Image 1 (cartoon, rainbow, N blue to C red):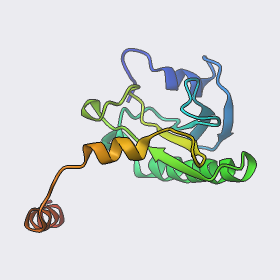
Image 2 (image 1 turned 30 degrees about the horizontal axis):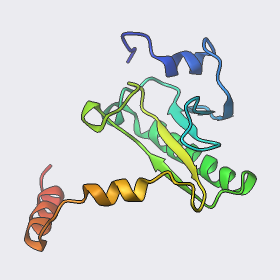
Image 3 (image 1 turned 60 degrees about the vertical axis):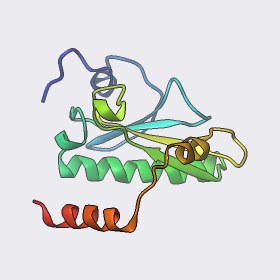
Image 4 (image 1 turned 180 degrees about the vertical axis):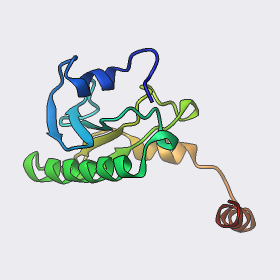
Length: 143
């Protein structure tokens, strides 16, 4: 599906916009984020335009996920980072900023003060076991 208006990630894939490419496969491209959260922050995108998760083909998603794993492991080995966050925002409600599916591979170091844990804990909502059980049942049984 072709995006309207033009997609910055599609332009990067085509080579119309410069990018700091890390690795490329038949179906996926990894390049450095120009607004990194930490040194080595990389984006991994499918080469074929897919606005978000429901639009990406299983084949493209598999290759994007495999490339994201490669990037995460490479960051650990070469940049000697201690961990990674892999983040996907899919859809407007998830605050997706570019309408082309992408995985953020964020290198993490002990004490880097990125603060995801603090943010996460501040957003936790109380639940009860009965509600969790009902939700799991609905997710398993509804087609």
